Length: 74
Image (tube, rainbow, N blue to C red; front, top):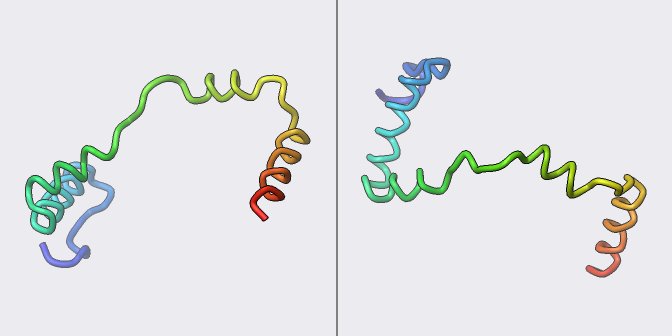
């Protein structure tokens, strides 16, 4: 397939097939594998962890901390 006009981007199977083909042709099999390994679904519950991390911290405190960091950078 040349160009992207023939690819149905709403079709996940077709998109994966074309994407893998392009990655492999441009990066080679090893390069494509290294590229894909950069991405992961992660682990844990980000929303729960964020809630625990930020529990008891007000928006005003966050703004104050950001302003202090900005001052330190100058």
